[in-house]
Image (cartoon, rainbow, N blue to C red; front, side, top):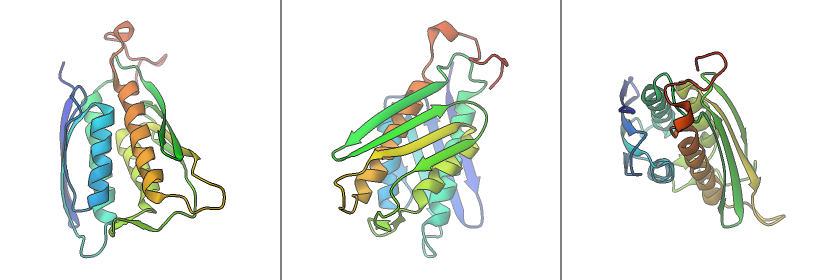
Length: 204
């Protein structure tokens, strides 16, 4: 069974192409024009074990918002398409990932019900790498959860030394790695669920 998807999303602000293979080997080919975001989406591929190709052309002359948001929406849509009716999946995934002084947690349910909870420090630097606004991280998870139709909880459990400004790069990267690992677990096929949707309702 092929668990792949190809999504094209075109608006007056962006043009996004996403190709996803849930049963890949962690190969990422990412180009959005936002360097740090490219690095983060590569974390989804590598640590999720997904083959992921993303190409986005957006109105970066305005700012990164539309590019980042529309890419997250297309990525979520690709997961929804590749998962199909979700028969045979594990359904739930959770991961805690450290990145030096930072500890991130991600929990996902392929529930069919879009919902997102996000908790990170409020006093992190406003930008990473020049054109990635850190305020967009929450919006990425909101957009992804909505279009993937999943329940997603992402939290920073530890952010560094008391009284010191948290490292924004570590805080955001740890989130992406944790989400990747949680998705890897949730999307994995469970032989005990072969042909069965893991829900008492019979549908997700």
